[in-house]
Image: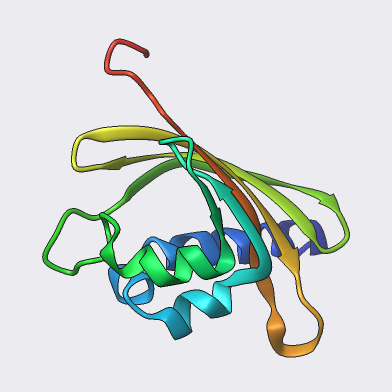
Length: 128
């Protein structure tokens, strides 16, 4: 397998893990996938950091095994430079469609790939 494709695939695997309710409900598991310098600009416009995200993620939609689950689509990625991958995709959660952009950074040693930045944009119902 080519190295760039392998890096993109690993970032995609991490992204999909972060959509798993079991991972979202666990500060420890989610913390292994978020970079300590993580920042997110959510669909609401709110800015999240590593600590605020880990503190509130278990209460977010998509974090309960009995609730709605993320349905990702059109996920693709590109290697920006060695150790840096940009992903784009859409999700549906509870009828709400959202477009996403995330940057994954490869950590040193056993740290592996971690989400460094995430942007979510809600898609209005009348937008194709």
